[in-house]
Length: 315
Ligand code: TXA
Ligand code: MG
Image (cartoon, rainbow, N blue to C red; front, side, top):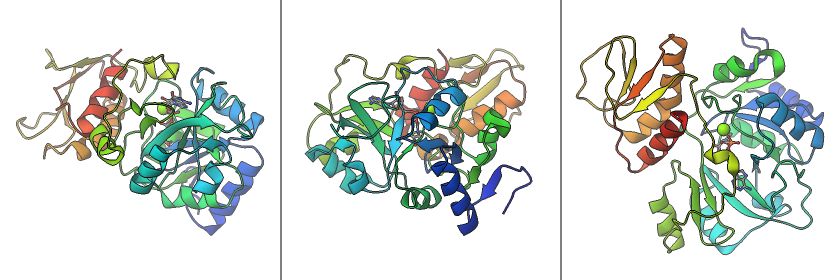
């Protein structure tokens, strides 16, 4: 069924067919996942992958995550190892991305991995996207569906905001449940978290039975260091605003109602805060505020990922 926007579709057998056809033709589509919405294209196609970088205005040296529906498909392109299987069993499908060595016979387009010999792979959980992956015989390269360095989208309308009519199909799969990008863990050597997310280092450590590396290794994905996740206005962390023209992001019960205050979670629940983060930043930006101040958020569990995104956005 068509939404009032001509390129936003709710998920049905008919839209599944339409989406699969479009992907097979080398087009890009906007898809829901449990973390954030993605901009998806055939990871084996030079044409499709090129279009992803172009449309997002993404630097070519920042590699993309490749999404699979099952292990069999993934092992055509990457070398799966012991640590991978342990984590896969516990967390997949779900919000965890693995960096692994690329298989010699991999058909992945070299642009996907920015010519690295490693690949980031993920098994998304959202029903619609899983069904789409099941219906095609290639994996999907799928970065978050936002212009490079901007806020990640957590609903179909956010995708529309950045790409307008440049995307012919955006599947509306409701609000992303988690609302923050997947944890990225490098398993090519000693396990190391490259990007924090809902699956925490404590949980990963427990499953693997080893401490995670804290070494500042050679930068493996340069894109991760750059300014990112930005609403396009300055963000000042750990401070209260001085005047009434600023927005203030708060957390927990202690603040009274104030129209310039935006509470990530009145219950001081970090998961709820994570799922509200991008929605609230987008709201503040669209209301025309010039600056965002952010109260200190506890730096544990999902708070680590929230602070990571906020501090990158404030660069
Ligand atoms: O939750 C998510 O992961 C979402 C949804 C759509 O799946 N996708 C996402 O993709 O966040 P993107 O492109 O916005 O972020 C991918 C991250 C980047 O930080 C990139 O540098 C890193 O993964 N990455 C990709 N390939 C890599 C590789 N071979 N080695 C190290 N890092 C890699
Ligand atoms: Mg992104």
